[in-house]
Amino acid sequence: MSDPRPRGPQRGGRAGTRPSVDPARLAALEVLKAVRVDGAYTNLVLPSVLRQHGLTGRDAAFVTELVSGTIRRRGTYDAILAACVDRPLSKVEAKVLDILRLGTHQLLSMRVPTHAAISTSVDLVRAKVSSGAGGFANAVLRQVARQELAEWIGRVAPDPRVAPTRFASIAYSHPRWIVDELRSAVGAEELFDLLAADNEPPRVTLVARPGRSTPEELPGEPTPYSPYGVVLAGGDPGEIPAVTEGRAGVQDEGSQLVAAALAAAPVEGADRRWLDLCAGPGGKAALLAALAAQRGASLVAAERQEHRARLVQRALRGADGSLGVVTSDGTAPPFAPAAFDRVLVDAPCTGLGALRRRPEARWRRRADDLLSLVLLQRRLLSSALDLVRPGGVVLYATCSPVISETRGVVSSVLESRDDAELADAQALLPDIPRSEGPMPGTVQLWPHRHGTDAMFLALLRRTA
Image (cartoon, rainbow, N blue to C red; front, side, top):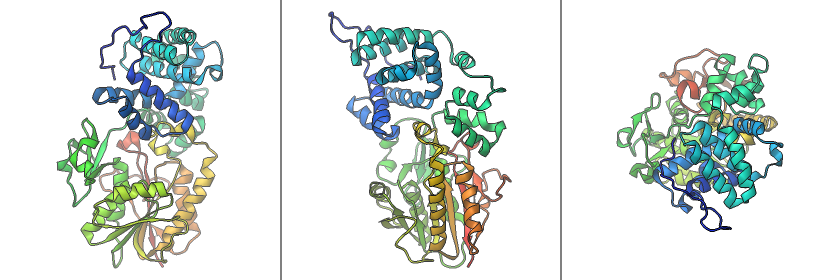
């Protein structure tokens, strides 16, 4: 994205005065600081920062791309900056390094003129740090500007034939352990396509909640796989009446397909009580409640964390098929055994399937997180099987393609029980091309194949 605003000279007028700074770049810097210092999430902190600076329309879109792109490509940019700086990056003041990253993204990945990218970055360093630091930033960014992104990658990344993981880590800005996990999940032939897709901004996708709104009511093109989805052509989804009123929402098509698959699964006997065992923040629960209401069924939404439970309550406002939200731990829920006909387990996971949407996640997750998450996922799936009646179904889903979190969890739980079996989830989504992988019947969505988050779905049926 190019910088849409005309820029004149912004140097300070009198000696000793600080230069004025561009509000958009200043807002971007504040978001980076909140993410780095406070552990904030980009998508949550960005709207408030934009409001504080009065940025809307093209200005807001510029800041969004500047922030998200800088965070996504941080690994690549740090390798480039390391080649341009005469000291370890750990010795560069954090605030200055943030601004250098913002400048590098503008120079190498946005259609911002070189002089504008450098001068606005230097002004920001001078205003927030010092004049001397501004001179340092000017020298570094001028070196960055001497080559295109592909040329820099050829210079700072190793030969992919010699060190494929390290090459992928630098060229596609993913930590090495994530590269290894994704290679195991998707295969070496598609790895680079997947990593590249993780660095592309995701489309804004809306969901029409059946019985409350229709896709035709929403602006945009229909999604290829979900009958409820629309890809927003542009603009602020918060200004769409159906979204404002809670009759529609913003939801990735992959998440829509999770709810659609659970609702489409055949069950034996009654079909009146549905459960979302890990409902926060509530998008899937809102779609499930709408689908349940059309069947004369009702949904109970459970969420362990109170602040996320409040988000679920907000998402379910006005939903006819909702029985409300229960704040409870999904591994020890306050429900009678075999009380439900359908149960969704959208399990907490590494989130490596949503790296497009959550740019900071790749830098926060660690390989050590996997063991504790897998143990929790097994407990949640076992709990769900206890809560569903014989003849009912459980849909296990994760926003991660990592093998240990997907088919590894399902296999482990099925091996430990004699009252459940794997059913065919692929049959529930006939528009998704059928694949016969290591666990036939399960579904693995991919951003580079399907344009969705990398959601995994497995359908289990309670047999006794």
